[in-house]
Length: 95
Image (cartoon, rainbow, N blue to C red; front, side, top):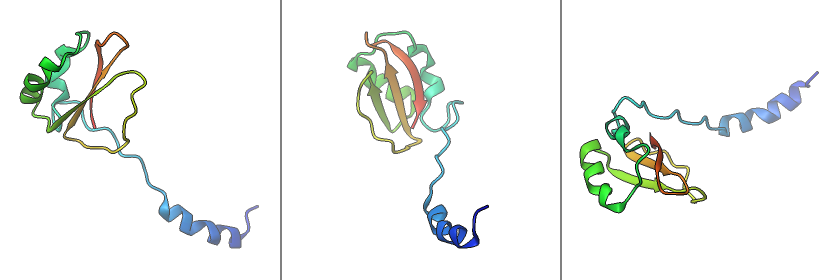
């Protein structure tokens, strides 16, 4: 049984905990990921950046290759374009 004094000591720590933010909806709102779904399976090139950003309305695009270091900040207006080792788009998500 946990003693009341231990619970009181842990209470301030619980207040400091953050809950992870849910991923934004994939319905085209926010970063427009649904509007770029046709990119999945295609090889990503930088020539696709401007047209993809224009058609999705995303404020920023971030291309993430396997092994790339990325920040964990969540930005609903940023489109993350994840590629495989050959550079083909495998996933699109807001954040």
